[in-house]
Image (cartoon, rainbow, N blue to C red; front, top):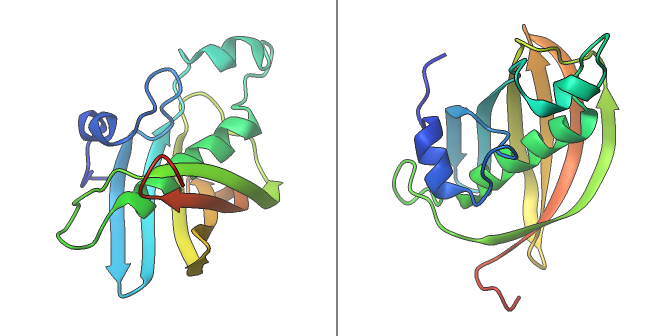
Amino acid sequence: MKAIVENHEILKILEHKYPFLMVDKIIDFCFDNDARSITTVKNASAGEPHFQGHFPSFPVMPGVLIIEAMGQSALLCGMITGIQPLEFTKKRVLLTSIDNAKFRKPVLPGDSVIIKCSFAGEAKRGIQKCDCSAFVDDKLVAKADLSAHFSDSPED
């Protein structure tokens, strides 16, 4: 999977930093009129601290961190302006809801999680809905509908 945006570039775009950065690279992006989608990768490394205690005899990535990876992927998608390929804008974004979250299979150390997010419909009052799915080896491991408030200024 060739990256179109590498990890060191994501660190310049997102305010998230290690150990809470949950997107390792962007491998695909589509901007077509008002439709936007993104595909990212989160590599689940055995050295990540959550695997040490969740659970020591059967380490799995916590579902809340899979949702966080989806949220960060959606944030990247929302920050791409589409004016020029991979041009980003800084926006203030707050997660407003997580709906229909489902976890189908565990994410284990060594897995590469492919996250696909697409914006659903138009933003209303600054709230944008995003459909997200996570896959390991082409098998659905989790999905959720996220909503976030995007604003251009800290006062909104």
